[in-house]
Image (cartoon, rainbow, N blue to C red):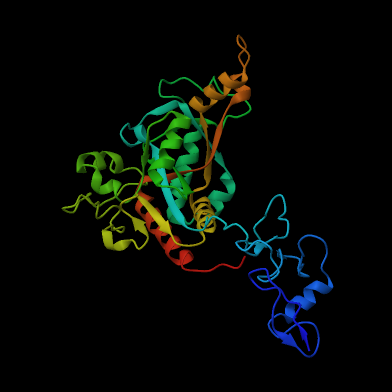
Length: 354
């Protein structure tokens, strides 16, 4: 029977007696370490790609009583730039507003032709062919006005001879509007247009009928002679809130008529399919009223200043044309509101196939 070869915490040889082997049952682990012991401290490396443990002897094999095992975690090297596997969330462009606006002075100035604002009729034959009988007179009257002269009696000498159909806009029977979409607040979008074109802009919506005074509305809609095809036999009347109630004797407007109109934003809210809705509205109005191009002199001047060398006049080559404008008979304006609301309501509820 021999003495255990193990080393205690006090750095002394174990006094236990052993009958089999060189270590007692308290120090059997030291027999395993001593088999691979080298000069200095021993190392135990775990076969792991993510961690390594370094140990300067166990509690009985350490010559420094106060030293404790040190565990060092070695993580796999990270790539220089980590890219998320989660795709970025795409901005929702299907929800937004449909709005209509016109130039502010066209709501107050009447029976004038504006040399700074010219319009060009597009698809004249197709528009007339597609128009029903009730719209035909309005269309013909509008297109016949394309041969008219300026308010001062002069011809359109400032226009290209190759574009005789480009004439100043006459606001007597028609209202010139643009219909667009936005995912921003409508007021912010209107401010952007005003800054770009340097024209005062007014939103055209059902609310404009209650915000304006009855006298201004009468001047807006009732400048129609009895001999005109646009004449309404019924006298215009207004409800207590200022709504025009019997325009043309068939169109009635009230807050309950609209399901998508947002009075706060003066626009028609679309829950889904915003861009498809705008295309549908443009297509519908193009079918009924045709379209026009608007030459904006202010935008053209700004464009010319940016692109023209000093001392040269290239205004003609810097003309800016705004598209997708519509010339709508004033007596049909409320009908257009109802159609826009109908399209926004029904297409906004659908989930269209991509």
